[in-house]
Image (cartoon, rainbow, N blue to C red; front, side, top):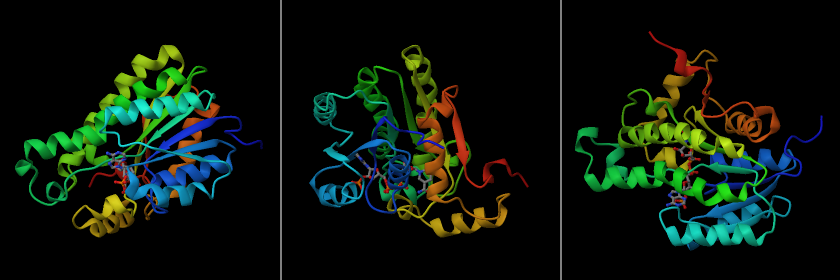
Length: 256
Ligand code: NAP
């Protein structure tokens, strides 16, 4: 079978290290022949991301803190300067204050609520607006979400509410951008051990609960999320927009 993403250029936001879901996606995209552009948030992450990009054929790296409008404008200019249209955007970014992921949700501060929504939900809107004009032949935008958007998951708290806003944003963006041939979808991944996940109190008990109750009797793997991202990025996913696809070993279907 020929490579599914040959000739496509993909921008991937959210590679922090080898354990990042975005890194698994970048590797799967490379396997399928895509040209990769990665971003990092500030100087602190630059070396790590540049080192990882060095493992991908000809990948480029740009700086982008999604909370800074000036950085989004600079990202747009750097993408334009490549002279190539953009085909795929992967938004794999989230942040909430650690204390908001351990105390009761009702204690969430105004600032903590705003910060979690700005980084984890609004950024999909602002980055989509930034890159949509570069998707001159249509494109695929995808984001990473979690079951906590739909159900109460202990300690997920304000991040669950931000993910609900993110999933609604997927639908509104899909409706706005569909006429330009741009599809917008979410992948709802099961719990995976990453740096962000470590910020959630008692995360290991979530992993244990999924492994015991999910239909597949295990947790999902980053590579499974990445292969779903390949599907959405490729022409195989051409009829799919405004959706949230669960890659969670089936956990979300289970009741008692
Ligand atoms: P991760 O490796 O820690 O990735 C999170 C990324 O968000 C990091 O690269 C982080 O950069 C970036 N980020 C945070 N604030 C940013 C900002 N202002 N500007 C630019 N980038 C920023 O963790 P992950 O688990 O792979 O998370 C990726 C996505 O998957 C998130 O949306 C997460 O909610 C979602 N997800 C994760 C799981 C799971 O169990 N792990 C399950 C379902 C969904 P820095 O490191 O530089 O801060």
